[in-house]
Length: 209
Image 1 (spheres, rainbow, N blue to C red):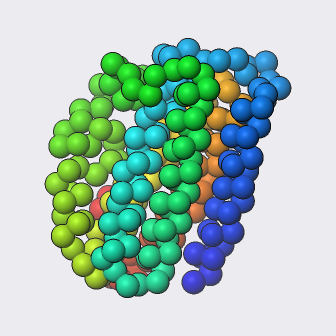
Image 2: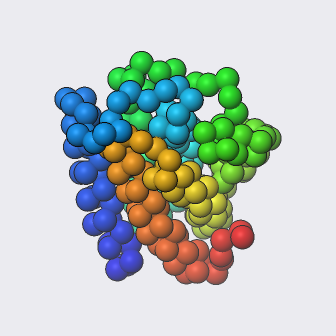
Image 3: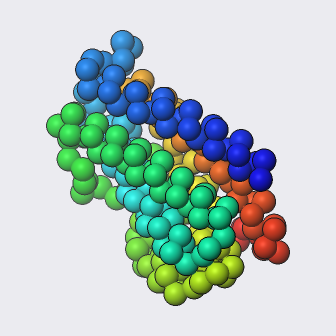
């Protein structure tokens, strides 16, 4: 599938850039005027905390569907999402350690975006786009094409929420290396949305909204 192959090439580039970014951040700051240690209430810290949680669910969903389908395209997409987002999650948690900041906050998720009132946490969906606990259980109970379709629908919602958060970091974060990672997330996840739309169409389905 050419659309998928194009996305893989782009994702590989993002992964290489991001891997180098964390090494660079450990060694020295990024040379910008805004490269000091951010405050615990900053957009930089809030994004790192919230997106780490957001990414963790994507990893869990992706490994769930890999065990429930034999379709090579969906399995490959799920594996790539799991690996990319697990690596990015490690980077963001590593930055919080480097900054000496807590990985959890007493404030609701998305407070750094001015959207803390939207983080209801209803049935485990801590942020917009995240699957509920009931949806995660449903995914774990499906097999074959039913699992593929539901996974692609859930991940489409998940990516839309993730892109919104990453765009806010691009606008509000002050640490250069984190802004670049967020920009890479936006580009990669937009490409993945196109791939998932094609995979859903091939299965006679579409995104939920």
